[in-house]
Image (cartoon, rainbow, N blue to C red):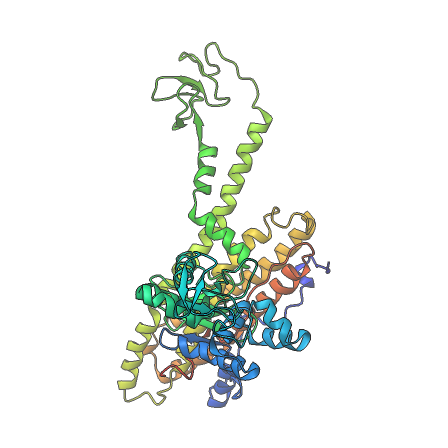
Length: 540
């Protein structure tokens, strides 16, 4: 475990904190502004390409065919055989190549249940004009027999019944041969032909399942979790631990399909979302503020200072110990009752429930406050556009470039989102339960101080940036607009650095030092969550 310093003076931060009290000399020239803007929005290298793509309903077939053709060309296979292979290897072409190189074609096919036999029909030496099916034991003509790639043949009626059962059971993608102990995958073209002759709707269902296998069985492709569903899927080209934005605008975590939640790990966010949705904190409140009536067992809430309370059923009882009593009492005692001291375990349980509730409220209120601020600030762009129109119509305004304003708003939105999700992270990181075996109480306090110090400076800069962007710049003269421009650009760059350093603190000093558990977060991207691009075959 790494070293952690407890003194604020010892912390060596790699950023500057922007403060109103700092005297900063801004140079009112375009060169300085351009340098600052470059710090806010760094240029993306020309040769870089998006690491995620949108797959629409229209482009799904083309996306699937792209991988199928690669395998068909590589191994000289028919389309149905290539699909069987890719479904088994979860549409990972690189995995198919790796197994081919390491184990050879024969083992590659065997692992996928793919058997290719040149014989398609029943040999004339085996039967003459009819054949007894080994499933139904009916004599059928050669025209009513279908042979699969593995060489086994049965009557069309038995095959069809077998296929219908498997499709209805949701096993369309890997329907195996009916022969005992034969694990060969049946030819999808023959399945389609036989089922369509009996039930065209079911055949269409089979086709849909086979098409959607590219998404359902593909570790690099997932449906967008939008509700109602937009119909899109996202394909990633790199490590699956990332957050992406669908063409519909929804931002989500590719690993767990929850909303984008970094710097929370997927496990932390799962715990937090369930905690916020269920009644766990209501239960805590009940434990702290109510007692069960000893007669009817209904919950009673105390609404006065006296420790003799009465249930609606008429039963009086002692609030301190919960025991039934008489109704007569004085200022110092209840007639016929003496509960003595609190039971130690009950006192500890109540105090623990109180602390747990107060801690949850502390983090939840701040998490919600920043989400609410983000919703209110989302209207800022509309107001900004209206104010810019006023300035553009003004003949005295020499500069028509207000990109820096929208860049500042984008930075504010991204930073506000990260700040909001940093509170659920802190709730679990420092609660003493989730990582009880990972760090001592002293280490936890030092790490919490390190984190909260950076979090507070990050939060202060976000609030300052919000106030800058909320200024009534459409009423400013040209010099005041230049001054605002430099302040917004400088503070946006500082906020970006603070956000990056907060991520580094979480990844390296906090999660990176864990020995018994693994918690990963999506990497920080200064340009925000990546928007998945539409593929080149979109219009095909």
